[in-house]
Image 1 (spheres, helix red, strand yellow):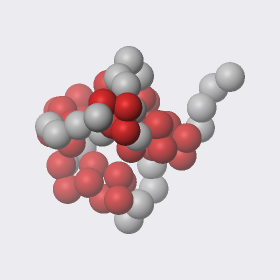
Image 2: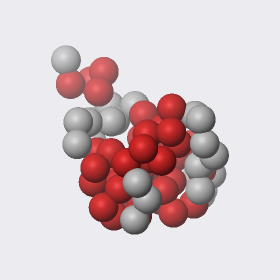
Image 3: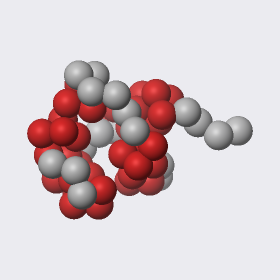
Image 4: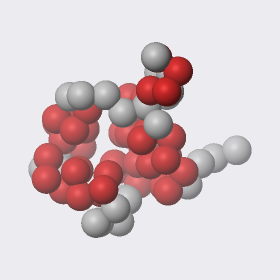
Length: 67
């Protein structure tokens, strides 16, 4: 089953770490402010950013499971 962009954003938000915005910015070519706006829901999630978010967080534990 393929995840849509909103599901990838939710998946990423459960596994977010510090430094991810910079890494996503470098990987996608979008500015850090645009990435932050997408994460906060101020801008729509495009497939490029959604795929990059999923790619960097796919093998991580949820933040709530780290404690």
